[in-house]
Amino acid sequence: MRAWIHRYGLGMQAFFLLCMFVSVWMGQVGMVSNDSLWGWYLWGSLWLLGATFLLWFHLKQRQRLQLVRELAEQIQMRPQLNQIHVNTNDEISLLLKSVQQLGNRISEGEELRSQLVADVAHELRTPLTIIRGQLESLVNQEKVDSVQLFPIIDETIRMSRLIQDLQQLSLAESRKIQLQRKWISFEDWLQEMIEVLAIEAEEKQIQLSIKHLIQGEVYWDPLRMKQVLINILGNSLQYTPDGGRVEIEAEINYDMVQMVITDSGPGIPHEKLPYIFKRFYRVDGSRNRLSGGTGIGLAIAKEFVEIHQGWIDIESELGKGCVITIQVPVFPEEEKSTPFFDSER
Image (cartoon, rainbow, N blue to C red; front, side):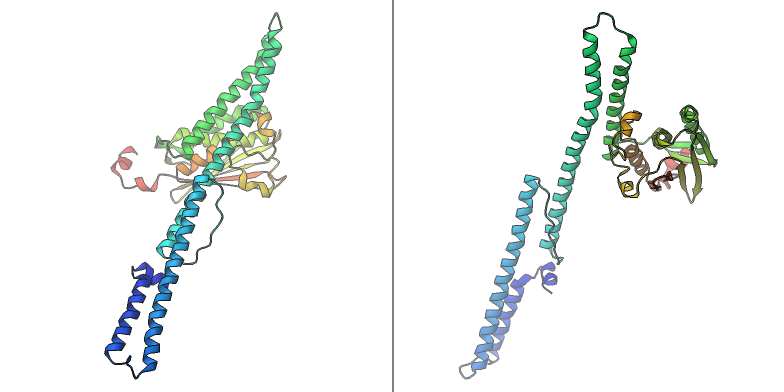
């Protein structure tokens, strides 16, 4: 009742005025007179009740505004905000919820930024240490063997790849990437992905195949989606043992392309699946560094799929390989009825 009154702008002041009106009316109709002690009691009770409710309402609103002020001060200090339960839906409560949500978002952003700085520092420390060690060993040598330069070149390439991937991930997360969409043959596009990774698969004697090669056109950014599939298939090839298999099954359902990538790798524990698409996350802390990966390939793949209004999911059991499912619309929903959409096809 109080929330309804406050929402429509009446507040407890209206209740107090109502009590005054009733008391005046009682005096006019003769309920309050020298001969009516009961009327005087009722008249005084109404005034007292109205004043009490008005005071209670004022203190309650002041308490809530104090909470809003304290939350704002916490946001300035940038700690993690404590959860405050609000049971009503009036304007002050909604303001309190909004401030709390804003504070939590800022806090999460600060944590992500701090974690990113720590992750980048950790990733760069190892290659820089290797480069420094190699260079120090070369300083005291009269003749430099070109073989000794290979580790320096490899680590330099890895750092360059890490910086490039971080830039791509940052643009994708902030949605600042402008997709260069165009109609492409899905069959040709998928076949090209297989050819790109065929050499790596042959070196490990891994059977890389397409179960169903569907025909049709899709309205995608071919380069971004190419990076998605290369990151995912490359990850599967890295951790699938020699002689294993990586299989792609593709189909189109109701203007939606679905690609399912299945591998015979070691699998991932169930409790670690929610973190697979997090940047720099490793199921095995050393395997990305040993394989030359940057640790953010799957995070980039997820962002690019979502920019195309699709989704990506992973299923796995330890010792039974992984199944990654990607669903991406054939074309974006908002461009269906535009003249540009019709003319491009």
